[in-house]
Image 1: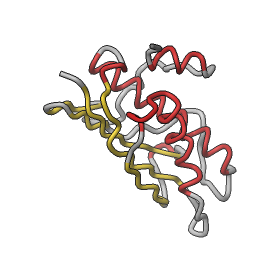
Image 2: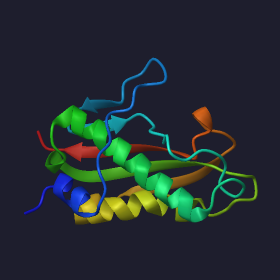
Image 3: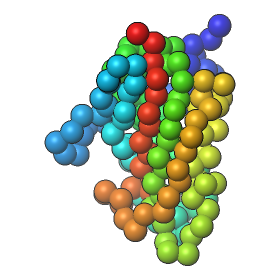
Length: 149
């Protein structure tokens, strides 16, 4: 059986180096069998969806944000095969007032979770538009996962 890390590599993607915090917080907190991540933006995509970026670029930004999240989780638990369930994503999209395709952008993260974790990657999700995000990042995602002891 392939590990999540092997699947990511086979998809032609890679887990990035951990991103430094932009403030007084940690990248994730483990309590019991749950990990709550801090929001992860992206360094590659900046600006507003519906003005500066296309839905396709937003989709790729969501994929990259998810890879950043998986790096944070892996740093906490050592290996992604310890993830037993992805519970929830909160996807915040830096978008114009009239942009209404936040769910299509969020699919970048959700589709990648499905490919990497299969049934364990099925999750609840909120995809919302934001007036602005830190550093003008296109997207920021928070994730809750369940892990094995």
